[in-house]
Image (tube, one colour):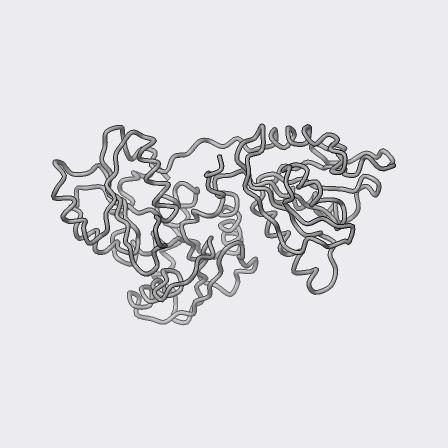
Length: 395
């Protein structure tokens, strides 16, 4: 459970007004000092995250957010951070001071939950203090709790677990490998590669092959030709880092199925179809158009970074015209996409499905094409049809 990637955990957000006891309740639910608590309103200034196992639910990511009624210029920024978290929360806990009841800010939250399709619980905190009983309208569930005494904390955990989305289990390599098959994973080790480890997509694909009962050969692109020659029969599948698509496609025989880590993750996260449709916008994009390149992680940028250096160079070089590029990373993603003609997103291995879906929906609502790194690189190099062929339309 402790090694489950954050992107594969159920995201539980604690929301509410300042001093409603969000941080105290998050601490009580986790059984840890997740957030600093104080009687001073606005103590939590940035979202606080904690990956943990929450029984009876399993691996989760708890997110404590700043007060939604914060004031001033900094307060507005904190409120925006809270709105950003709402788009990634699979479950919301609206923390209300039981003595104060539902206020306009709480009603605004309830409306936002509805707009985002987020199941929620209203936790009436500080029930150990004198308070009046009051009815709550339009609530799927409410419960009186006390972060101070621990009253009904276990009941709150069980209620959260009941709201967990029932998702169809997906596998990264579903339909692509069978027990006993051989997969070749091509993993470049360049200046941008992390020291001493494989990146998350490579780790998860490798584990996916093992779960199926297949076996995997992991090689650098420079060793690929020699590795293929040593096999007694062609591999069932070759999966490569998209950055070396052109070279790998030239080495791997045409009749051997070929795809990339990025394309597999786009399918796994549920946005490959949109990415394939969106990449066609590049064909007729006028010179000077703005392209937003978005990454889900905040890794240290190397001299030849894929998002900020290689992709802009490849796009402008292949299309022979200049564009204006903007960049965002981590949990930052603009709500107004009107300045952009295209959104080019990473595979999203560090983001949960709801976050990626929300970003794709924002783009769709504003008529902005949305694609991803692997699809874009394959399209630029004229091999998109080939690398989608192993999926046989299963996306």
